Image (cartoon, rainbow, N blue to C red):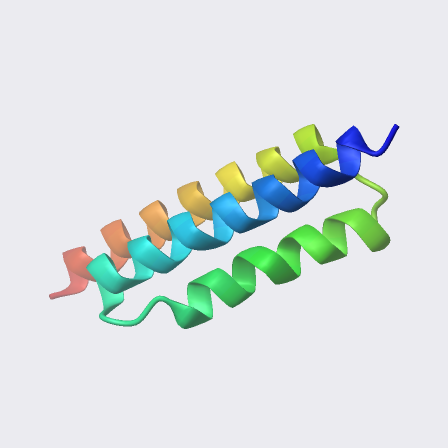
Length: 77
């Protein structure tokens, strides 16, 4: 009955850890990206009533957004 809740919490933690590590690798500090990931997840749950699949798609969108940002930023240098 509460399996969806545990799955959601586990996915939030996994995404936060992933973005923390990504932030450490790309920007030197991952706290802001981990916070952005958790904030997007909370907004998705409470504001848009997304399930865990919808929130995972939001996380994929964040990843692609960061990828595009890094590609544009590196072209300017």
